[in-house]
Length: 138
Length: 411
Ligand SMILES: Cc1ncc(COP(=O)(O)O)c(C=O)c1O
Image 1 (cartoon, rainbow over the protein chains, first blue to last red):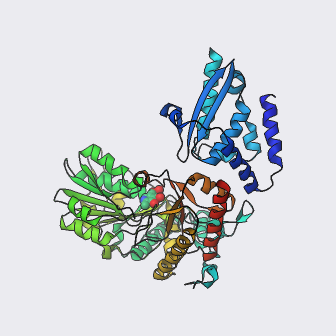
Image 2 (tube, chains in turn blue, purple):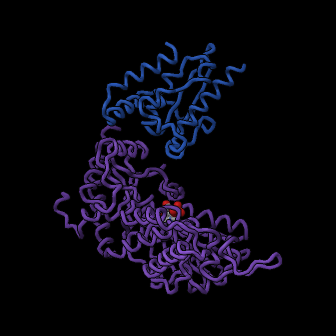
Image 3 (cartoon, helix red, strand yellow):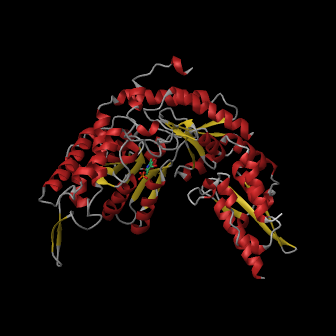
């Protein structure tokens, strides 16, 4: 699946929810399912300090594809991280660096990526793109 | 149940005067419990601002023309209304600022000019960042020493420790009247009396008290009292710093510009008298007028009744919330009001706040600009419901149900 197809798939998944709480119920389940970063890896260099919730991000390049693992102390943040990783994992660095993550807007979660929200997610996406840019340069 | 509660006054008729309250968000009736951050505005205030810009807009204190004179009169009328409300002895002791933060910075900068190396400033462990950082900057600038009154695990200031901190070296004490995070009502009258015994001046951060209780600056005997208009049903971008004339007279100007001067030459400038000495430049005219109207509105209420009713709201909320599994209240002082801060074991405040929002309930989550308080309790933040007199017992029920639902979803 291309990055675009993955985004479409999520948009369709979310189309069934007409109630906000149902939507969040689903996000929370995603958050609970997301593999954790072990505590000993939650070091400062992986930490993205948000005002409200904290996010840890690990980046890897395997066989030329980007691999992300991330975690947060807040479950909703984690659920959204889960969606972002679903879309961004196993992609070329170049694709990530230039990706327009429009699905977030389309499923109504743009508030979580607004600069005023300060939950670390916006910085996380920026870091993901930055590491992809670096990987693309080598 | 909510129905059994006696309602001290007619909340419904008060609510009708606040247009923002009667709307839906996410298809749910809005339950606004973020009054500690900012309050909603009664229609009279909104109308006064609209009226000002529609018909009265003009610069003040400078024009010979009709509109300017009229605007000046209305702006100065607001000052008088506020003077009477807080029982300041003199009109010129009531300075317009842009808010609490601006008022505290004014004192820190200007009164700070009178301090010297080794002088001590005392604040408390529960201060808002805006009553911490200005003093740190002053200490940096002047070589003063900052001391902090500790608190106990209920969120009450330790008065014995305060007494021990005080000495002839203490030059200024700056404490909050009510903690925005814990709801603690501090004994500011006693704090002031003790500081005065050592010859220190006292600034009270009134950002969270002016809207909840009768404030009489003469009774408190404080030297400065600062608050924000937007938290007391007035507009944003305007606030008040009350200061005793004898002290304000000794203080150098804070900012230079128009209005604050008497005579300017390139060789020497002489300054205008109070309050203008501290009000350089064109002020927030519509804001000042709107704030005056907010205080006229408040004057129509019985503040003792308001205080009693809000206390009832907060007490009921605490009682009901404590029935939920894993609930922990942050801030359990004997003297507290209007603020209910909590965390739920194993859950992040941000998650609870987000789910409450989607149920139409506006609360605040995070550190509430009091990071040292979070460090003290070793928590990342709290969920904070903060009440105003227009909130209802039924809204408390909605909050508690909302929290319960959120907990169930997150567990
Ligand atoms: C206790 C306290 N002090 C100071 C402030 C700062 O007020 P403002 O941002 O309106 O200047 C606040 C606002 O949250 C507060 O609660």
